[in-house]
Length: 253
Length: 255
Ligand SMILES: Nc1ncnc2c1ncn2[C@@H]1O[C@H](COP(=O)(O)OP(=O)(O)OP(=O)(O)O)[C@@H](O)[C@H]1O
Ligand SMILES: [Mg+2]
Image (cartoon, rainbow over the protein chains, first blue to last red):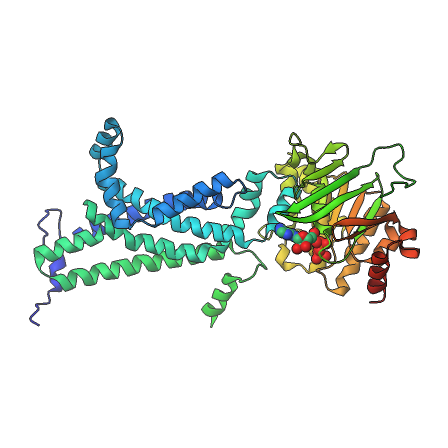
């Protein structure tokens, strides 16, 4: 293989005129982080609501939640991205459709919406598992004290469910970061798109992908670290696996 | 079936069950269960495993829906669609076999959450009431700890205090000691005995026959979803009328 390694490429000017190739990748990274974070917050809220719905005693709500999960889980993410970008603006009333197409950063918002719906189904399934893993007894205890359904969920069931599902939520958070690269398909110049652009203009494919790989890994490590901190912070003293003390042991050894 | 107790002739009973029947799907769990608990009375409910004791006591505060008959708590119909069940439950205390403290809250928070959110007491007043009750069950030094850091017996005493914090008009117990190690049973029974002596109206599912002999006024014996015996304590222990109750007693007392 004849390949001219050239790590200096990152300091050379990129053809998009914004600065060096390194700066181009930085811009991509910024979009990647922005789209992932925004979609994650939305997915958490939507998934929390839908997951809770599926556990309600009212059949109607539960079925609605199940239908949502099945629908958004079973369509490939890339297809959903295209649907939101190309199809939805055409089938909604024209005023809304035009607004969707003309809104600034429409590919960013499309990516956020598609990622949020897709990921919220996975978050919802986690929430449901977390809620159901608490024996019916907790719900009964809350109700026996006179709490209504909303109070029982807000004060008793959900705070524990959230703690129980934190570890699987960490991997969903990491998934959304990785899945955000699909947004290049609707024209968002996020990290993967910028890496591809750099490769095409500079022909330094290895350097480009080495650096973007490292960036993805570093961001994911930050996520893992942050979520661990959150777990430690929320750990309930004396409740099952006390991850905090476990980590302390490992740290101290 | 007879309701010829000396108590409750004039004053309406605190808890009244009239021919209560319940199904899980097609499976009949309770049939024609009738009994009552007068104000200040302690009724022990016992019976073999699976006979429907937990189901019956959960019907009393509407945690389990029932299909037949009627239940009145302090004159309010539990089964009526118009009844505000959360409100009714807020002054009927309940203690569960597995304590069911809220693990992510401190002991103090466990005692104040329903006071502040359900009956809207202000925080200071709720904490004051909680502190009093923790004192009463001897656990005030643990107020800032979490349920997972307490022993089973301590947790159950906290659970009793949590129910009392709502100033209940009556208390329901579902096998409060059966998940406890033997050495912890008495600390919980002591709290319950004291409560009974203070005049609390209590309906207790329990197999602690010593407790029944000590504090119960009446004993109701359930078998296969039916109340087959509902008599005064002395009558139950000295002359059980039904064969099933006699068998049950001999098994449990000679155990
Ligand atoms: N959610 C449920 N769905 C279907 N059947 C149930 C349900 N809960 C209880 N049962 C059945 O109803 C019957 C009565 O149960 P219950 O828990 O009231 O008995 P119990 O007298 O409290 O028994 P134990 O001494 O074991 O606590 C049992 O046969 C049980 O299998
Ligand atoms: Mg039971």
